[in-house]
Amino acid sequence: MAETTDASVSGRESAVATSLSSVSPHTLCISVGGPLSPAEARLWRPPAQRNLRNQWSKLASCRQQWASSSSGGRSHATSLVNAYLSQRYMPSMDLGVLKDMADIRKKACQKLFRQQELYQSKLTSSYQDMITALVNMITAWRSMRCYLKGGTSSPLIRFSYIAEDKSDNGDGSGTPVFTFLSIPCFENLAEELVEMFKSELFVKRLIVFELCCAGHKASYIKDLNWSNELYSGEFNDLAFCNLYSSKTHELLPPKMKGCRCDMPSEKHCSQLTQETLQVYVTAWLAEVNIDMQRVREIFSIVGEEMHVNFS
Image (tube, rainbow, N blue to C red; front, side):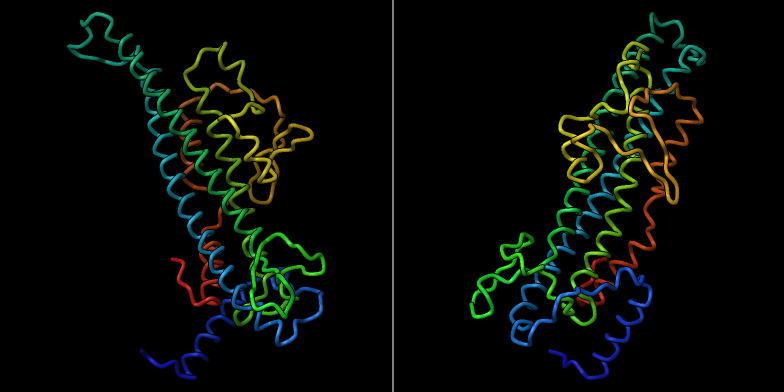
């Protein structure tokens, strides 16, 4: 087993300190509670470290789950758009020798419409998987605190994100869990991640909503609006993410970086041009609300602190 030299330890600490220079002052917060005694810190720190590693591993897994679902959704959206446009332009297509076949255009349109409905279902499923990833992200973010159970004299230390003792806020009173960062610092970094994905989710929802209207009859489209669930139980999931108000029964509008989109709750589907459809597919791929450089930076900061590689 290789020995850990003073130089290597110093190098790691220097690397972490360099990474922390990019953390905002808001993130580097410290609890206002009194510091833990040395005995309390010895009891609290090991389970707190294990819990943080577990929760950030879950966040990394959720990030990959989101990326996979988003990639699948883009593929389904592209196939959906292709099927829809093929139907639209079928009457003017040059079918060559196939044009003399009985009802060839009608049969082709029917098959394309069935394909379109299939891809609409798959796109909605990908969107649902992305919500699941976000729900799991939020659960991990809210589960980072480590509460002492049974007092400091107890040999058994348990942790939970639900406090039994109101005097224990679960953050170790600002004690660094590993080297530099306290639990509130880890929480703020996780919250920054969550907010990016929450903003992007609603852009995805708007695109799914619009693409699910494509090619349907006017009577069907008229019954669809922004306030409809895209799948059974969607609003329960969004309420957990604080993206749906159970009191007012309203959704938050989709947001872009630095601005707000005021969308009426009764927004209905619009007629889609080829250019608009291309914009939707491009917007899905771009994920403008997720700063991937910042996401990588956050996981790098946390990984350096924990000596864990999340890549």
